[in-house]
Image (cartoon, rainbow, N blue to C red; front, top):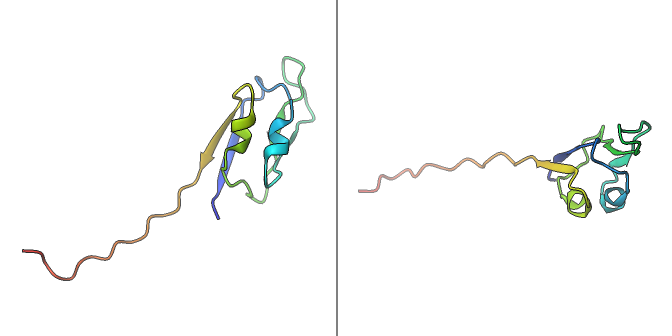
Length: 86
């Protein structure tokens, strides 16, 4: 399964909650604290690393507050050709 993580700019987030409903693994929640503008921003709550990096949260964010990082799987080993090409 794909893995990812998100970074939320909490100072720009207005807490509209669109990303919360868009998140399939449900790892985004409202913070308990307010940001400097008086909004209650969202935070990533993902202790089990369930974020897949699908980017649905970033797609629906009207203020572009979410950056998505997706882990790439390790490349498969390429078998060397046993015969030399002349």
